Length: 304
Image 1 (cartoon, rainbow, N blue to C red):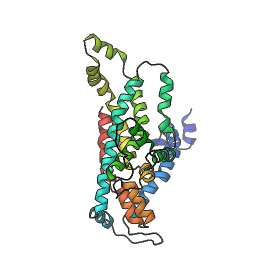
Image 2: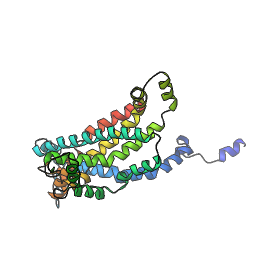
Image 3: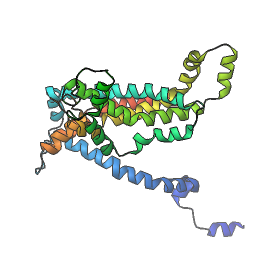
Image 4: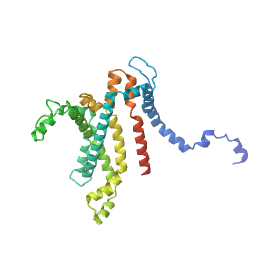
């Protein structure tokens, strides 16, 4: 190409000088996902934050009160009980799902007849719609026709009927049982996938050195499963703190607010009582703490 012809070529756009074609293609591919995140996640979140800073009620726009809703919640005894209930509910279910998920994953990782069929059946509690499965549990815990009480009485494990949904303690036990049953397949399948990535040679070397199954679990299985456990526990903690259907269908937050958690209290305050601003503040109250937990856990995973 001659120098004169090169001078006649149009100058490249300024953007093309700094952005490579491959980068433009990548931006174009991720733009639909970014748009959906902005519309479905970012906009509702910003709207909820703005509403939580107002005294808005149904039918009225309200005015900005800044942090007054959050300060008011700190002085509310019902909200303090809700915070306690939410932590008890979340920590209990996540711990049970983690322990039982590891045990179940270890069992499903062994050679057994119809292993693939059993693995598929494990996903049934996760596949069935939440409302449908919880309604079944509601019937099983019914004070008059409780199937659970009938089985326990028949086995001689109890001497009288347990008021599963009528007593504050047993109501919390009931929602913990249902949430654990519902989320256990997610833990078990995730841990099973992690177990299948551990090289078999490590266990063979440990057996050669005389290490038995408990030591193999503590020194090989558990350390190599830590990244998977961290991610699964993180997701489950967020989902459980935001859980609504299980508690609301079973107990509606009762009895005597014994199972009232953030989601059910926010629903009662915002949609039942009509105090939209205060309800938004309840739903966002733990967001800073959860954000710190997420950042620390992600930093841990990147380091690992």
